[in-house]
Image (tube, rainbow over all chains, first blue to last red; front, top):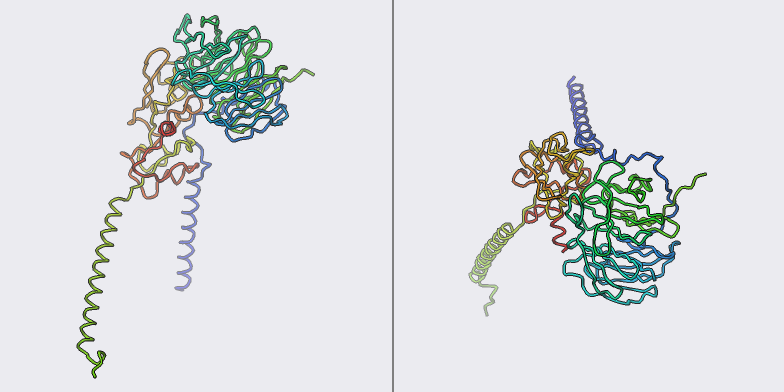
Length: 321
Length: 196
């Protein structure tokens, strides 16, 4: 009789232990539904009819932390922290050299020279991998984020200030401006994070991304504001967050290709500033990744540097039929 | 001729001396060891629990699973990283049309974030620690749309330093670790300062 009593007690105790363990495990399950949630999923939804581009190519970056991208005449320049790589569009490597200073931007001049912004200095290389020039330091706290070329002048975006500097081909500064001139909110360039991009349109007009005001602005060479478009909005047609569009490029018809920071998405806007289409929705990128630096080729193919996946992705417009 | 071995007194003296010297040596060693132990203990660093901001996934469990109510985890604002944005992703509900301080516009469930105008277009957002429950909704919004200046950390004036931290146990990212008390906070802007 005592034996049965002992067995019964043991079974009850065993069941109790199993219950406690299972209860604890279920309580600790990492798949537990979130009580507090921002609901970022809503931002990743894009009407499929708006996506008018398809990804046609992927090229793996050579190193782990690609930072910036540029395109010239069938070549892609990729900047890493301390490395410059030039490849063709098949991925064949032409240049891979270490750079002592940390690279902050990369651009090709119309003659094929490679301009590297390295913090507060500009270094110039040619396609034969020779260092041609080193410009005088722009300012002790300068941080170059973009370099573009217009006829015989070179515009440099500098987060310090923030200001846009205009130089001649010899590296001599001609003038600089702070972006003031709006009718409303005349506060100049507002750059809350180190994304301050420039582009030259097909009509040789300078466009500047004033990210803190979520707009793209058009300037004369002397810094006079001509026009601007863009507004802060959580909707797809606007720019959301502190500092967008983080990257942009201009297509041959004057349309703008933009990429946003935070929830990464690539969109195309008409020259007037109206949303035209989506190139890549947020679901195509890792959530809260670095914004993709953009470059466009002669046929309006769009190259995007997917930083978190370490690849260059080429998008082409889906043709009807 | 007498051999030394044959003298029992001499033998006894040696034994006594041996015991005495052994005792003395033992005592000295013991005292030395005790001193060393005390010195080591006095210099040993204490460890505390802290969230690694770089690994935190803002899951919200810190608000629910801490043994303290409200949680000892609070949002902190790294102003060096902040863009002082008007359209603050950590403050406003997504889709908010008017950027006002109305409660219906705020994403924080306890209205723990105070928004104040600095100069156009800059706004400062500060955390009312008494109201903050450490849910990390604002942190998620700031990371998604801003610079990631809002972060959650275990406040050591509130933490009871459990032997096994209940939020560390359930953290899906293993982002909560023991860190030296001298480096009790792990904030992203500190990382940037160190890097600079």
